Length: 229
Image (cartoon, rainbow, N blue to C red; front, side, top):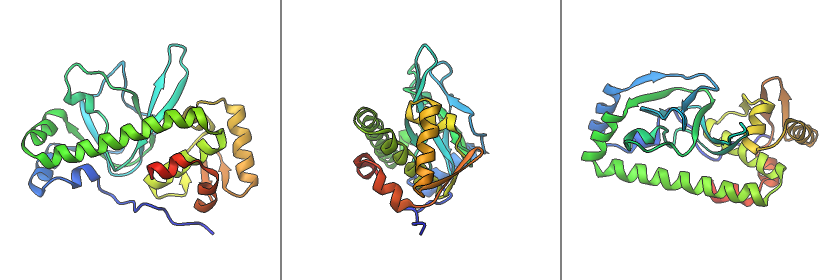
């Protein structure tokens, strides 16, 4: 039996929702609405963002790439936050590359408009600080998880985190994307997915993964997921 998502998934952004109506209106007037394609890089160390992206749906991944081109995912976010914060701090590079992992609607707001609201509303500072703390906790826990837990446990954790942010059991994921998320090679990812499919946790299709049981995924993941849920 498929279990319901632990978190309610809506169509608005929690950071924007935390603002008073007048400030939400100011930012809405300055925003444009986009649905960026999967794989689009919203900001990187080489090309920092100049605007902030606030997801109303979809998922953005944060990753690091070494000089040899090897990439590993360090975090992800959905409608609970935003990316492009480096645009608020002149001259400060982003800590990670931000890439659209699952496409969804997003508000794109110029940095100047966000700065004006932050300067006048302590609620905005509080909401942003809470999001940044949660994101930092996720990234730090991921470092420990990558060192201490098995590939299967880490894979189940990422799948659950994607499910929490999309509310959709059908995830547009390729083996290459999972390999980046887990910092592993495709042969190991293929073998892992085959085992999870044989155990009835998911089904594989070309370019997507369909989750069958939240309960079984939670049973196979590590404590990192429960700490951050």
